[in-house]
Image (cartoon, rainbow, N blue to C red):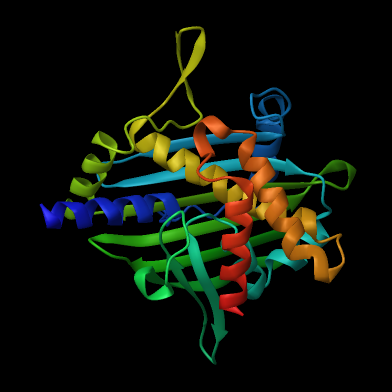
Length: 292
């Protein structure tokens, strides 16, 4: 059973960390993203998230994909400057509870983010899984930003990871964001997923309402859709926490980001609560110092 235990750990780590892959190229222009903003205007204003946000997820025979569309109160110029920077992306990614390390390097041909993912608690770096993302600014204009992070393979048959961020300016100095992630998995990854969902992940849920109620409580989607929805939200909240902390003095920005991310995740404690605030902040401060 040792092999199954290892598969289970890999699934938990990879799914929790939100490693991502696009099933097919889906690059939207500024015009199409603006049109999406108009189409979602009602859902952005009226939703259960207590913020201007729309979440969607999907699954295929061998992969998962999550999407968040959100309206944020930051000017596009600030968003574009902040997220058009690989070092800043490491400051975003380290906020996620499963990210143990991130370091950006650039040579003559490409920029790479070396990321390690692991447990929801502190652990030695050598015990975390290394993943190498290529970082690419696919588009950068005065009215549109698109950033892509791609990794061809990961542990135990996971592959083709992708994280994508798109942004356009909208009315009142706000910015409309689209963030997606997805990943593919093979036979061993599927076994690990099934084991996780049958054991410690059996009571985990996502955000999509299934329409029913149990003991007057809403019922949310579970299974692998729940996995991808939880981590879609974790990564979006990391981006939002980073953007929100930019106004703080540089020496206070790390603490501001950590507090913002944890407070935001606790708004959705049914889905996202894992550790208490002190444990999270102490762990992340240590990991941040390690990656410097």
